[in-house]
Length: 115
Image 1 (cartoon, rainbow, N blue to C red):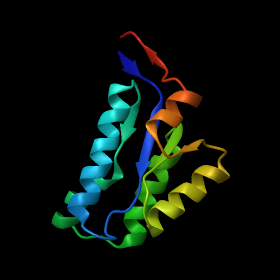
Image 2: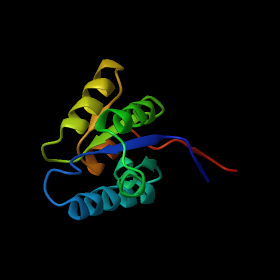
Image 3: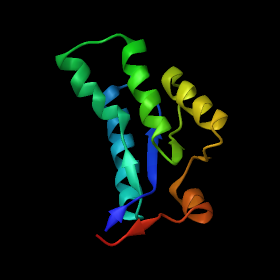
């Protein structure tokens, strides 16, 4: 199955415990994947940052491009300057913003095709 509906998962990363925040993003992505979507998890770039540190602006520029490549933005709860930027961008692009998998499933079914 080729998953065509890309969902960008955003939420806190460094506000609070990064390990807990990364786990929450992965848990959400797992639920999205099981529902048929293709999740994008920017939180995984934290590992990259540990090896090759970059400025917040540099990393956000990559996240912005990833948001632009997605169909839906999935917002996790919690304060996050980066997630606020990503959500604002999604809204400016008229991209749907959802806050739960059940809300997403009620509004948008994943688009898939056989490979």
